[in-house]
Length: 434
Image (cartoon, rainbow, N blue to C red; front, side, top):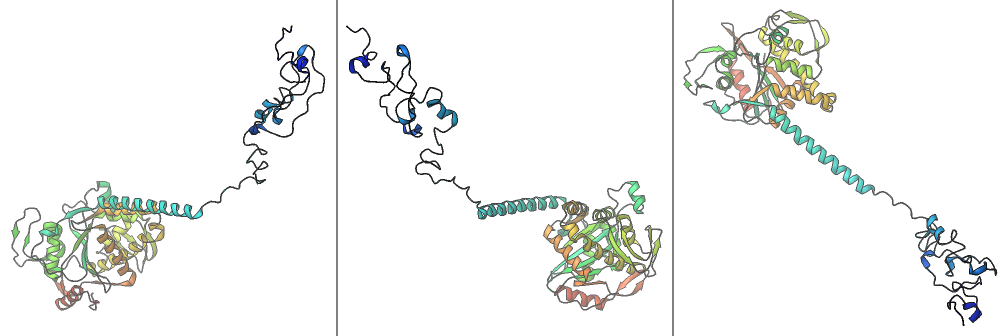
């Protein structure tokens, strides 16, 4: 009677060399193949001998479907340790395995069309955001304090657009040190040191300087603060006295009454703002035919090319005591300087450099007083028209003068009427001024 389990004595009963059932033989039984770990030919066993007392024989390789490999350390475990069990080069689908190509798949080429498209979209979006932000920033800086709806009995509108540009001696916001530095004095109230009409249209632009000593009549007008109507009495004064009497609204009313030309927009800049703009652009280059001095304005210039800072520029445009024809010579210098300033602002070194452009815009816009209907587009139109005129693309002139009375300059009525008619009809200006 056999007390051993069947599997243990199977070699005696059946005479076979069965592996895994107590057999001392070295030949393994058949096993099912696991394809995912199949690696190649089976490793032969160690030989016919067997360890005594039914010891565990050396195991055949699992890769051939016959066992767990050539010993514990070199069979099943080695496949995982080497990383060649799944996705191995010799495995199914691998580069060297069944169905493989022998090489790795190449990296896909970059889609340049897609990259260029998204780069363009990003740049356009950034440009739009910056432009919109700049617009609202600039628009918020304008002081729209002048209400032209208060002006009564206005002339009919003509073709083109007419801007009244005023340089005032306002000292608002200036410290005592600023007043001393800029030689402005400490006079109360405000007056106008310069006045110009800029006409823009289809036949070029025209800049007409109005001397501050021009002899004009103060018409009936409505008070800008009181709303009360003051009847005209035929009183004649210097043009800048109209501004001193009731501000921008009366000045516009007086210019329209004495010329018959409707003013569409009003722009004013004071002493301090003017100097800040010049300093913001790094100074303005000027070439003077001859030097001059003026203790009232602080001017002290030599002939030749030089760069004027804000303080010097203000002295240059205000000087009149150094000239025989004081007011007329001053308006000519003002036009020369505006030409140089406009070209300096419009240079690529300013326009394309945000570190120069934004300080310049900030200094200029924050210093301007305009009418309530003035938009940034109107302001840009005015600037480029002035740049064109002072650069030689238009016409600049003084109001035609026929003589003087009591120290006031008298306009040539015939020439003034012809000039106004040409401006109203947006015709090319043929009238000459002084």
